[in-house]
Image (cartoon, rainbow, N blue to C red; front, side):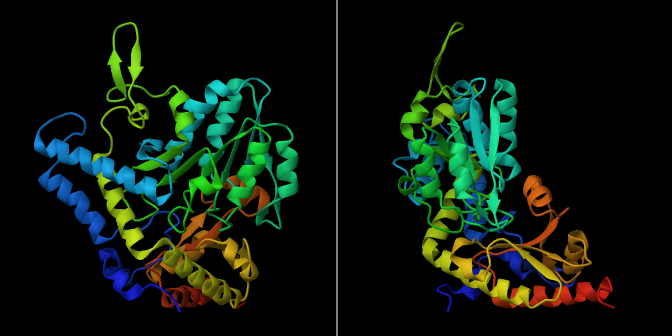
Length: 415
């Protein structure tokens, strides 16, 4: 029995009452971006309607209100991941931007010719390419640890790569393709034993489960608002305060400067030191409203709901002839988030997604910005993915499975 009232929750999401192709929308693509509740929509609208103004710029009333609302959202985000202070929370555009900031501001001065950087085979492009480009610029070596059973990080290989003494280790907390939840605490501890700095990609984990940066002990954590009910265009780079104090910002300009002359500049205090120019104020305010909504339901309850849906979906999908599932199976359900990628014999993933769309069912098809994983590890040109969140129901999974039978008829599979 699920611990949240899904029908009540769905009333908070206007888009879920709409129709697509004349049929009720079944939205199964939350790993890409989540839908937004009324409280988030109204928080952004209220800002524009009643106190739209710049932050840190004026002493007039609505500017003060804007500044306070923006800063409060940082405090909510810090509490969500158990950070020491809002000062450790750098607002940026998204997870990709956050990883690039860490690579450019922290790792760029650290990495030297011949140094190693370590990632894994299951990474999103956003946690591959910034390190690839850094390695090219500095003459460093980008290593990747392989997977076991096309599902889990091979911990023996991970340790073997750590023996090369990488200065940076970056890995995903939860795979957007496989759904695998990595043992971030153990992997971080191992990396620290070899003297590495650790960046954790939390894009798929922070929205769905409790993430405690003190317990994990990662040095950096990156995640995005738009995958956790908030607006697009805003994300967070968490960093340990002592590291952030030492780093020289790579992107500079207005508001991140305390003082400037024609000869020198002094950086602002944390976290504003890394936030140049006018930020996404409305995004931050909406993000704060999203965090309040999630906390109101409870991250443990959301996690339990995800597990229930994912277990049910794995079971139902396995009943479809010709379906191949990727990632941990039902016996390893606790090591999964609510994202399931699959293939169907005789059907291209894009055709599957097209037929499901005709039934009002939104799923994602492609390489999911993880081409090395999908093409080289899974040996597929693309996969279809359905992903769940707190507003999804088992009945929607049933509709999706029924639609897969229609795919067979349309494509004449088995005819």
